[in-house]
Image (cartoon, rainbow, N blue to C red; front, side):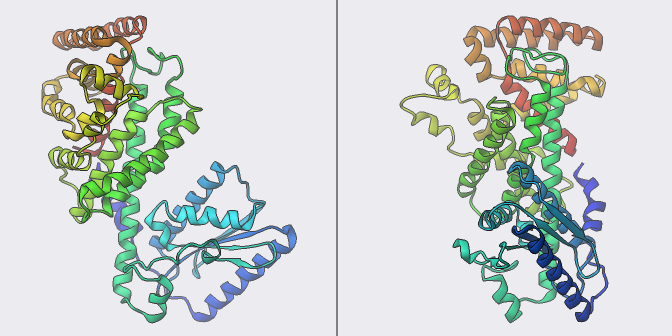
Length: 462
């Protein structure tokens, strides 16, 4: 639950630490230069030096350790994505500041571009200092690549100019630094919870027509392991959705949605890369991106004390962010996607309509949940799914089986809901239902996406 983050936030944002003397700082800088020179001479290839921009006399504390840990994690993830293995690396944790030095066998300009790209993935990167030195010992600057100087933590001006002129008080700088770490902790936590919810949905067994731990359902191109791999690939982009929400609380929702859509496109690319072209979570990306961005906005609006979040404000934010997305369907003259074709044939708006109306089916489920409280907790998600299947005009079912397929699934789900079966008997009936869906090539994927959202919000304590 979100309130469980409070001790973590207090610990990771601590500014307590000891001042470091100027002599010690100069000695540390000299040692870093000596090591950089040694790597250049030994390997004749570019060097990347990572340090943290630490204002004031304290160069290492819990907060700065956290920032350094996140920088290393981001670098390692990017190296892995680009199939880059540093020839040598050294990580130093000292009172004079954390630092890491890598010898990397790629062109210096490419290495600098990689660092600049990383700096755009999270606001926390404004505290990362990634220096690239080419094989001849020449530092590569942002200007060498035509990139603007880095912005100040507090104002839109050049960070170096603000530092030189001491434009901001140390208290304001420390507060801004703590806020960045707070945002990062929330965004990473929520992104991980979203990933775990998607994995929990995938592993729930049995599920009619859907991939589960024992069956591919009506899908021939995916299984549970692939769904888990896909969900994990989306986690960094889910964090970006939260950050976007936190940093746009004063921006009108219509101006936020295009930025959110760009993150969604990047997430889809990562998904297709992880799954080798299989569409595992396209619908979930859309729903979770809106939900996570809305959560980010609400958390920031509540001054990072979001321990009484409710579903209604969240859904209102989702509706505001996605206003106008169904109108896009009406403008399509030559339908290409399944959603566009189904809108033209049946007039259904699918995931777009659900979002623009603020997840009405999810809200219905939330209101109906008390009727399931007599059922053991571990069994309740099966009933949540059946409820969604019975009430959802699922475009996945329409696409695969037309109106007859949709009606078959809705009626069967409602019958099982009405029976309130014991757990063993319910799973037996769900297994038979699964077989019937497989025979008819039916998969209620839209209901599965909403179930994953429900599992996510339940994990957060909604």
